[in-house]
Image (cartoon, rainbow, N blue to C red):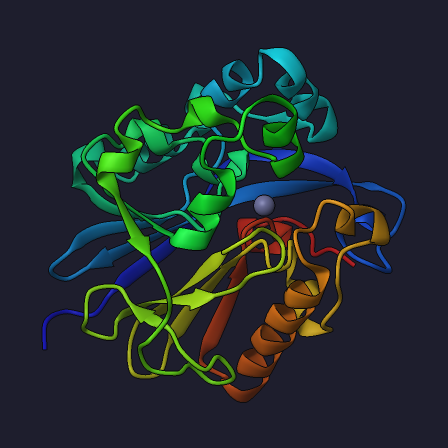
Length: 276
Ligand SMILES: [Zn+2]
């Protein structure tokens, strides 16, 4: 058995939203939501990222046609210093060391930094990709998808995961074992976006980290569990699937004291105040 996994959570840009939109029962106040990225160092497969946060190119990618509405709908903040590439450089991780990026889903705050890692293999579910592939203009806006964020060779580098046939994880009947060693497993979390996927990292025999993307935006979402507001659910792909994903995360968390659950936008995981 080689060395254990190392993992960290870093922030790459942020957005601001009303707490009452982020989670049902939240207050009428603006909250700062970090765009969090999972960074895992696998003993033989190198650095694996879970998503890539915002980057300045997100603004440029939203500069044409109906997509210009995106920054109005999602007020975000990004600059060179807070982009994932810069954040990793400060942790002495060079872009070439990143060998795999798991794309949870195709919203801009998850794929904004993809172009900064030209050597990485990209992993997404077939359903997530099918849903956005070829979308332009109004359809792209409705899906929250900015096509210009994807690298030109995206399709060549994409490893599509079509189905989950590996070991169960608690209430999740099946997973996809990324490297065949059980250390990193993709977990289906549909609902927020079509084909969304989470990543379960076995850090040690006692410690697991579960990156759950936008199945909930803040930790109270899986702990209660509670859906986002009715307004936010208007942009939810499948509210019933979202509820099921959330209930499964909640059950996994309740039954496993060694499990750290990481929603992609929880302020408390970035040193901020907890929401709701
Ligand atoms: Zn999202």
